Amino acid sequence: MHSYTVVNFSLREEYLAALKEKKAEEMKYPRNVNLRDYLYYAMTPSLVYELEYPQSKETFRLNYFLTKLFFALVLIVTVYLILCDIWIPLCDDFVSGKIVGILELYMRLVSPFCAAFFLLFLIIFEYVCNCYAELTRFGDRLFYQDFWNCTTYDEFSRKWNRIVHEFLYRHFYLAMIRKGYSPGKSYIVTLLYSAFFHEYFIICTLKIYRPYMIIMMFSQITMTFLYVGLFRLKRGSIIGNLMYWLAQLFGQNYLVILYTVDYLDVTK
Image (cartoon, rainbow, N blue to C red; front, side, top):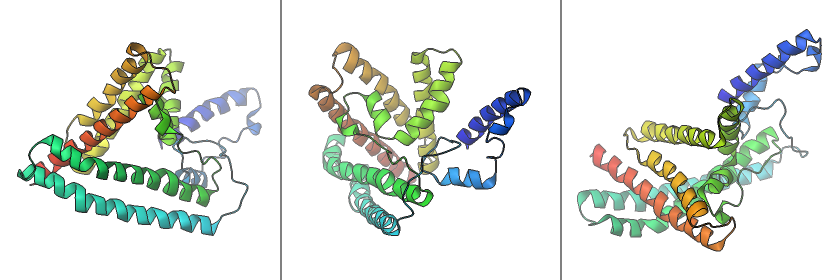
């Protein structure tokens, strides 16, 4: 909704300027402002509104759509079983005192976490997004890039979720650049918005407030400085990729453990 409003507001200013030059007839605005256009935007796997999206040359492929939908449902059930049969019982044992030490809990949950993380990634970006893309004949199917080869966290944030990255880049980062802010300040404000949005989503879901997500996301700035500034690691280096994966496994796994344990502790 934000992108739809902002883009059409910008198009309105261009339209009013074109009226003075008698060139308004060449513009698609305001004919694009209608329920059909908005519903199509809402169905596309993109958060950024465009007057025209790249279209697939092929017609709707029912077999392709059903295959993606089937695998999405299978993986959703798999993740649900991992959470209910492994993750939550182990965290519950930790809260009740049956498991002594956060390190023991972490070691027992690292494998289930990695499995659940990558399965959720496949569900969202490989299956669900492609289902919506097939329904709308959306042509740009590059929803993620090779984030597993990243060497810094800023590179990871650009590659693992291109849908959100394009939204934040266009409507926050570039918007601040146009207002005269430096790239550094624009990056920090964009990261701040992303962190608070993630935290707000967790608060609405778990009904608890813990600033773990904000702390982790702002630690990315420190990690990026260490990678590039202090250690002077070049992009694509093997050591940088190894450090990224260590931080990924320890950081995100520990973050989810903290939220799960606190949630179970509060709800008991």
